[in-house]
Length: 358
Ligand SMILES: *Cc1c(COP(=O)(O)O)cnc(C)c1O
Image 1 (cartoon, rainbow, N blue to C red):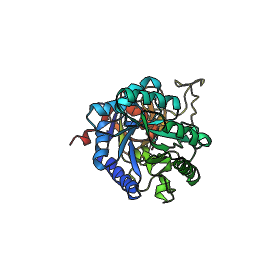
Image 2: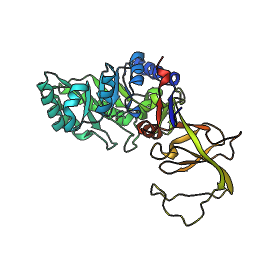
Image 3: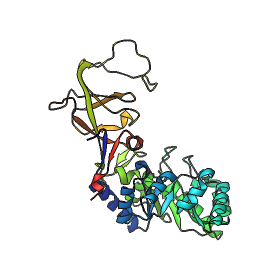
Image 4: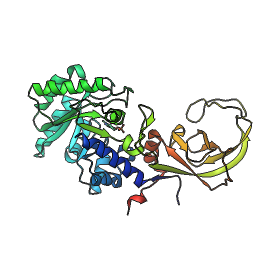
């Protein structure tokens, strides 16, 4: 076996997908399953489409290409507003693309016309988080103009909250989006979807307070980890045992808990802080900041504590571990969203999707 190793738990991932698909479809909300945190893993996307999600979303065209090459049929939504330089790839491979610039929409329309196609667009509205989208006060005019551009079809409007500014989606900002949709329709602009949000907005469905008129969701973190980092919680009706990270011990020694010598900056430019607990049993596992942020790992075994990491070495306090550890043993962790993201992106971490092979 090769370590470090990230194991995908098919049963748990399937359970989350079935639960969320039912939640959405029960109230006629179209669900886009977002797979970007796995770099567009085709086996996961395939399971999602087989279970009945409506679309597969990813922020990178390279990941959509990866899934297309694995013969997945999509439909695919490109979640990151596109670069002008990637528009030919977008028109060729994305069924729907999120946009926020009229200039980009004109390029998309031109490229689509060139290919005898029409490109579906979902126009983003910024209702406060300060990431992508036309500022809500200017949204109606700008989106009306976009809807008239030749070669594109307005598939919907949407918003994204939480991810950048940390703004929590609520009834107020969701209603703002619904109001914009109404104003557009009053001007004769037609479209199918009002896409309310991501995992940070899932609790609105859970509490049954989602404003009428929102009929689309784009969900990643909740499906894949059962957590909601913006609201700092785990969903009680979802599973969190979806991924396990395995690391191998390369050193195991008794050492002081405070370094000896003057303290400067660590390898990452941080000033580490140490608490003096006397001598402790420390394990070094062969993984580091290049593969995973050390504060994003939660030990599965009792009595294991992550102390700190440099780029390739992670130091754990295992004094309170019940049982006998040896060099070469494997220690397991659950991962946060940011840890999963980095681990999936690190070529040094083996991704184990073998449960999806049968
Ligand atoms: C990543 C992303 C999502 C999914 O977000 P989660 O918090 O993982 O559910 C939805 N919409 C857009 C535009 C995104 O970039």
